[in-house]
Image (cartoon, rainbow, N blue to C red; front, side):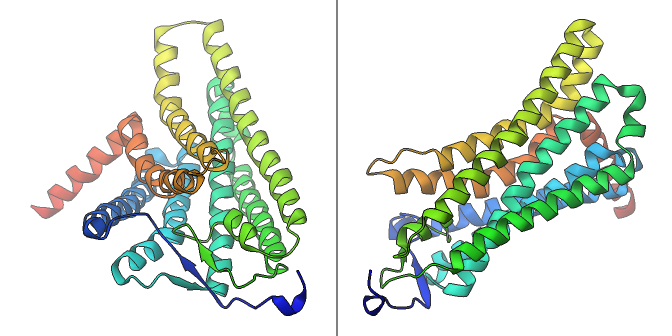
Length: 313
């Protein structure tokens, strides 16, 4: 397209969720409740891990950062969506849109990498229990966390810099409730082949490597348990790995639904539904999964409320 036919876009229009006007209040209350549950539930996880000395081990160190990431991840998109539903002012400035893309990618990548790191910790704890404290020492945990943040920030920065090189024509309507990178590429009137190549390359590697690490870790755990089968060993493995496996299944299930959804005429509707699951439902369910399926967290939660009741009396 020739330069004189292009116009700079200063803001985008978010179409949001396809909800009938008479149902706006109901869905606003529903999504607000989900967001508050996400924030309070994950902050409670962080508080419990901080206060209970029994939870000062690598598994819960990474879990506390996963909970913080979930709060941040939801906060990138949900408050804006709620404000749009309430005010019906659905525009977003260009700079705010690019910023939203940047932080969305950061927290999605960190979630992905932390789940892989937690799987490795479970592998060491179950397959090499005598060396767990030596291998998963504090320095290594900090390095793994810092590496996850650094890699995620680098990936998000490259995505954002490539996005900033694109030109946008008069079309500025985003059929979504947040600034999704894939939608922005479709709106651009520039050549997006480099952006798409980077998304495909980094997205494939960023998904395949962590997921492969998780599968290999749990394959080794399963082999270790079956080699010396015992009811006590199986129960212990399920108690320590069950919650993590549930979160992994939920995370990768919604991610695959989001990025590998059908390209049919209703793909926008499917993308929005998958995005709601990915950005709202998954972060909200994680605290419940870890609280209800993890014995240590259940005991810490009971102790926390008992102590608070004593203080109240």
